Image 1 (tube, rainbow, N blue to C red):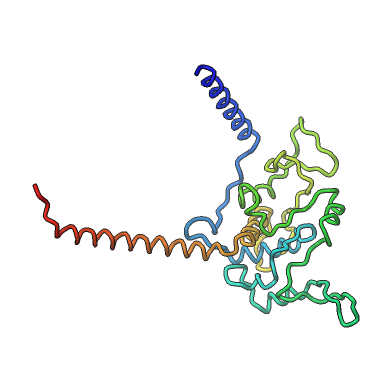
Image 2 (cartoon, rainbow, N blue to C red):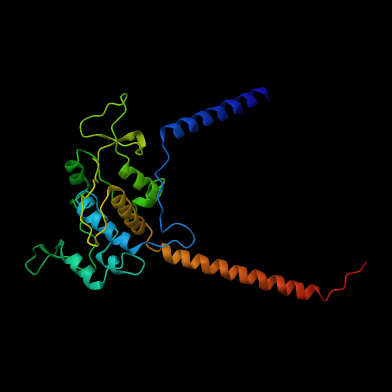
Length: 259
């Protein structure tokens, strides 16, 4: 028993010190107000449209979104561009199609049914263009990373000068929110990098919030529907509970208690 107790104490001590070291290494994520969090959370349409603009002008050169189609931009619950706007957006990109009647491939303007255009032909081409690092697909990134939206938002704003005891190789940058604090992607955002169509000031914080909101929607496009359904279920269960309670009271009121 003494050996078991000693092993238990040793094991719990190791876990404790591991958690302490992890918490010391990992700073707390930056905090911001997300409109999509909470029971009644919903996406900010303006933020989604601005986020798509940031993705197109900043992120799309390296990162794909292979699970999104241009028609999704006009669907309820998303950025809600008009159908004409979505068609115009799609037509500004060219996709490879075919073969035609001559057996040859050809390019054409994208349609609503087409997937988002990929920046590279394949994974190996993307690695070759980025020094061996693979830019991850961003379609479900907000759900695939621990910390979700808070992690992505913090990562975009977490670039800093490395401490004196950390040495970085060429093409590697310091980010206090990245696992291991080293990242091959240079800081993607800077004040005024894009000119928002709605006139919003394009600060780093604003762009980081907008693109994160867009990525959250792409990863969970039915969030608003799920919230509405959950609220209705809760109301239904409350009403049902009240009815069951009243029914029970009425039934048992007829039963005489014997003393």
